[in-house]
Length: 224
Image 1 (cartoon, rainbow, N blue to C red):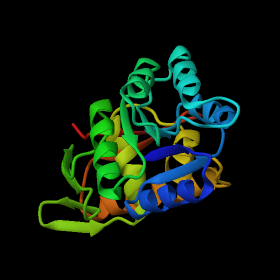
Image 2: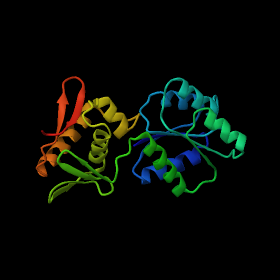
Image 3: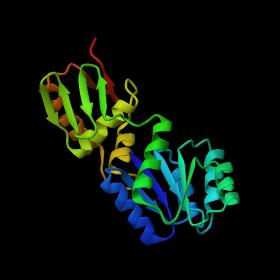
């Protein structure tokens, strides 16, 4: 899962990023409203954590302009402002939830899970597709009595396929979702990890395939 943090307090932003990394999320950080809006408009994020008091554009403006641009990414407003009018303003501008500083990391993670669950892009701990099972908690891929462990990147790519099976996913989307918006990863990285995943599907004797679609990307397909 890819999360954007828009927070001008660099120490807090770095702490937030570390919390998310420990939970195996990918996170990008920007420090002002202009960058927050630009990054948010890319549409690659599963969630945006958005402060209100930001340079150039405040969080209310960023949320409003994202919604005006038809960006439906869940927005969690994180701010020191805790009055009812501030909360109402944030929600009216398009935010989905609201947390005040200071916060407990456990509550932050719970809110993130709740918001992304509403979006319908969270893969459950136990997922079955075609003839295989995938446990997102242990990163175990299995069919019958055969199982194999996926490394972090392999698991993130499989989660992306499972979030929209039968849909063609481009290499560019895989890079931004799995490696990050500013990563220097390229097509060769994607091809290598797709190859690893295919070998592991073969290892468990799965007939489900990751099909290459010429000049477009890849698609997860059940065997019939």
